[in-house]
Image 1 (cartoon, rainbow, N blue to C red):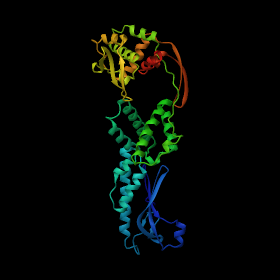
Image 2 (cartoon, helix red, strand yellow):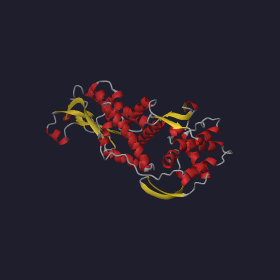
Image 3 (cartoon, rainbow, N blue to C red):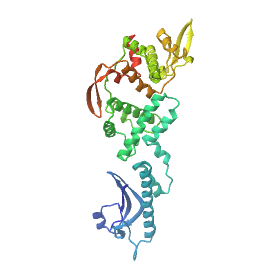
Image 4 (cartoon, one colour):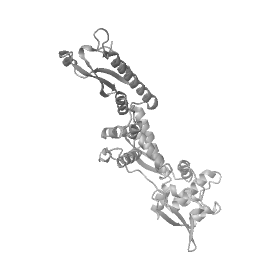
Length: 386
């Protein structure tokens, strides 16, 4: 009976290098002993550094024969084979426990190191992993990029982790190809992401891949191919007219303070035309007086561009409710949800026809206007009205 090591991790076996038919013709000729590993269609083989004639090799036990007339180093080689098998099984078990996947390249490297008696350089192996590199990159740049960009890239990292777990694989830079691209897009569709959300994940992934090339960690530039494209589609966007902004401004939310605060922050966005990262959280430190006139002075977070915005009567009217200060900052997820509630209460329920691709399918439907109003609608409204 064969002693091939079988487990949920893969199959490890040992054999002589040449085909059996060839070995049978010259049974006394020495042949290299090979280790073979296979798992889920992935495989590799390598010499263990010892030789054995075919007539001294036990095919069923996958070891050198022992007993009368055996090779002088038979026990030594057999012990080495058993130790190598145990080492490979331990590495596999650790991988499955830690990552629920097999890093074929690292396993091959670890086995080679054991055969050669050298140390495993795990750092070099980690640098070749897309996830390890991406996490390290994000951590290093955390204090140098805006929080929105950080969160978006971190979401992509989580999707890559989910992808690895689902397909029991570890992504390496040299394994990124168009087949992976198509598989990743399909995976995101199965996760019910919209086409534009899928596009954002591809865009973030390309940032990771490009940084690795720039720093000499990878030389794989397949992500620059026109086929490795950032998917996007035109979505239905709305704006509030000047009349609607006035209706929203006059709506009484005094019995709902959190909704009132949300509305007031949103109005500042409608009156300044800034992004939510800039209009949410303004303070008196942003006020500058020039020739007797009040201005809002900001350094835009996304573009690092300095901007001066006159404090108009409409802006001053909002500030007067907060002792001539700007409305206090709200967490963006709360802001996003509450602005829909505020606009619903203001009566913005006109049906809007929208279409988008989600989960790989084109969806068309009529939805109330307030449902598609976002924090960015404030900036769009300013640009359209002015």
